[in-house]
Length: 420
Image (cartoon, rainbow, N blue to C red; front, side, top):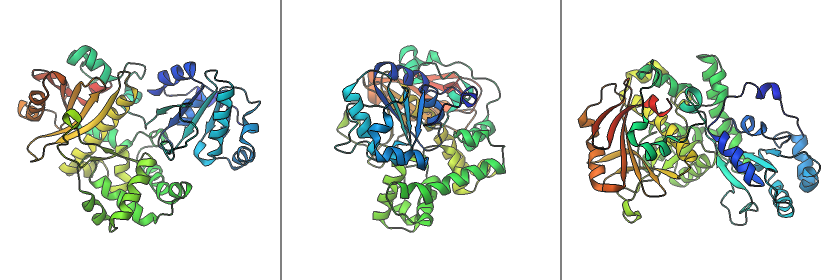
């Protein structure tokens, strides 16, 4: 067991998850926080706990593995069980303890993988509330993470929720924001070579260490090539064949890599939106890296090179926006999911669509331009006319200085207004 490092906690950067995590602990006996490795789960959760079991420490893992029930007894609650997936037997002990004593606020578990979370027979079903954490986004770095989700605010207040962002945001600063990444350690590292070393090491760790911990043998070079193919197509809708041909692997291997990378929360496949849930305009998912900072180490690019490549620049900015909206969907109290849309003949395309549980739709187009025009909103207008009353708002996100109206229920908004 470890004591809490209060000196480290004193420099804590507030996260979007804080308010919901506190509320869940006040109402439920156990909560599980999942997220990519090194996104800040341990730092966030240990602030609320009095005891810590770190299962990535071999000595502590051995004690828990030998007798998980005994390892939990006598510890001061709440108890943080860090990296639960390394000793999965601990879930059974938590289940038994919660069954015997369902008081709220007893256990917090964290994990760097989604392995087994949906498997039949998983012992925590119905007993542990699950929350998802992502790398740092703009509202955590530059805004107020205690605010309601921007999605909830748009539904409540409409486009009036958007104001001018803080000065200084332009194409260069947005690209710097994207390539810096949202991993706390990378942000704290000095700019330039030190940060690049950390991010490169992170990618190497995924290929050489993370796969074996999940019981899968993978060729690190082939996996890295496949991840590079996804990076080159982030924010796109590539065919699966294009990806695995680019990496020089077969389809079966690519399917296994997809499952592994999604499990580790390094990639995300955003599904196609289906109106009425009966007709899918296109079945291919939109592919994203979970964080645009991975573009640097995977594609060996820096800000200057990205500024010279219009396609790469657009992908980096789109991936940055998707990271913000992904976190906002996870935070939304009204419930929201992320989709994309491309019609069957390719004439109309919406970069991202947020659909609430009540069926309200937010359509988002992303432009790496400081001066978007009404013509840039033509797909948003088409989608508004197709969806009628379900269409809550259309956002044309851009790199300029201020928001302005383009059409009925459609507004051009600086990307930084998402977190201002």
